[in-house]
Length: 428
Image (cartoon, rainbow, N blue to C red; front, side):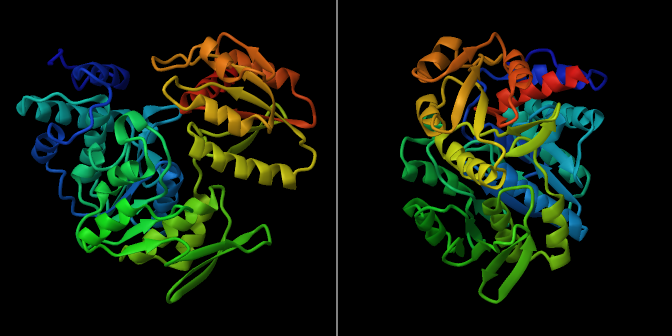
């Protein structure tokens, strides 16, 4: 499919709309179409250290921590993540700053020319990922930190062989594409492992056999949390301890989840990159990520924004929420602003949250895969629910009606958070 391409003088949104219509489907796993285009662009063998992060949850926090620590050390870091919360530019950052529109447009022109030269179509995700690689190559980044979008083995990020492979954890999500068991999903995630490289597994669960077998087959050294490296909260509310053979460190607690920060530290220590403890400290303290148990004050009300959208992610959210409620005794009730995509496991997510949430303010998302109001209400049968036409209205109602002993939890999807950010932007 070859619709008329925008030009280098068109704006970023025009290009993003274009990439949304080049390929017949939004998700099309497989590397057959991508590899020839990537080779033509010259991005398959970067002259940089590459750290690739796969997993069901925690990829965003782990890649953010990796990039922040390496930036603090003085490396020129290209960070690729998805999805974005508010602006597409968030997906591609250089030295901690989002790529600007012109940089993205120039990369899109090159990607489009390369895929036309190859006579191939690319999905939105494939094209935009290749654009990130083009930018990192052009800017001569020392380190590429890459977050896998879906799975691992057949994801476009996997056209590049990493120097370190990180698998944060394995949970049931995207089962229609990756399989309906932990082992099937682990097999797909383990596809990022390459011969002879170090591999980090940070999941607080039994190591899936598929990951062990892939590492063994590649003669890749596998480092597993609570086996090859360890971490523990120091209990003082300020610090935590990391330990591995030959290494012990006390480091500060950061804004991101300790589970993911520790995975990032473990990955850096086996990467061969020279990083001081001081850079570790500075990076951990600087690392911030929108929408990952993000606590903020809005109109003097406490709001927690979390992009948890599957049971594994929501279990992790609940652990952090319970800790927050334990340390802040004034909050005894939670009001949720909630919506999800229809292809997610709504019933299990609701089951996990229902004993914590007092009131659910729900609305359908303004995206094609959104759960309808009827689907949301069905999943929340027996709960106290207030329906709204859109998420912005639900959030406004929560702010206006919130009592002093209550906090707001916004969750269920990245798109739910995006709608709240749009509302806040309009209110400024």
